[in-house]
Image 1 (cartoon, rainbow, N blue to C red):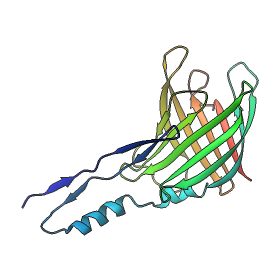
Image 2 (cartoon, rainbow, N blue to C red; image 1 turned 135 degrees about the vertical axis):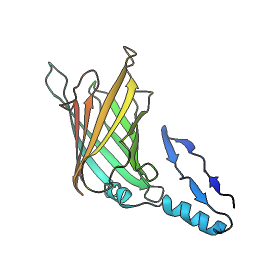
Image 3 (cartoon, one colour; image 1 turned 30 degrees about the vertical axis):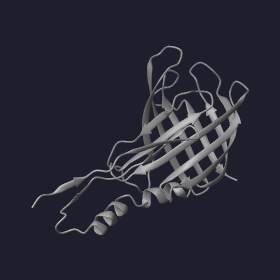
Image 4 (cartoon, rainbow, N blue to C red; image 1 turned 90 degrees about the vertical axis):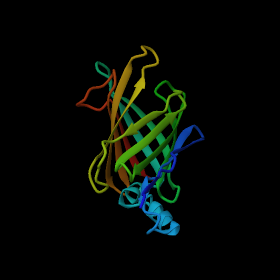
Length: 204
């Protein structure tokens, strides 16, 4: 009796400048004992939204964002923005659109996608905005519990001026259904201990 491993592809789609990931798990099956309809049901169950996705989905709505940017040797700089968050793909991801004034005085817009990968049990996010051509891809360590606690993800990018690779750590702290905070640590202008950027979200 032979066993077959059915591995579905990772499908990459580009929508409005953000990579949307549709991730499917590898399914081990015995074709003599498991009908095709049961195989499909197992795949759907493995990729069904769970507690982690519900935790993110509660952030759907309209938000005011107050940001503080801190660079060594300079006074903190303040910034405000408006953000809209919606749950998409049946509650598997949240999509955030933000708009505000940049630190340089022009308009700054952002488009961020965040989710929880059931297969790796890791938080994942893609962040983009109109002042850079790069996508900041963030991921947590695997085997993360989906319940309460701070969500911590890391990602790297190339400094457009120096060409050096910089690493950022991003934390998401959800205080309640009406308040949450992002903090960014690291990079050339920050440190491992103090956030270079803090973004406080308050529901409108």
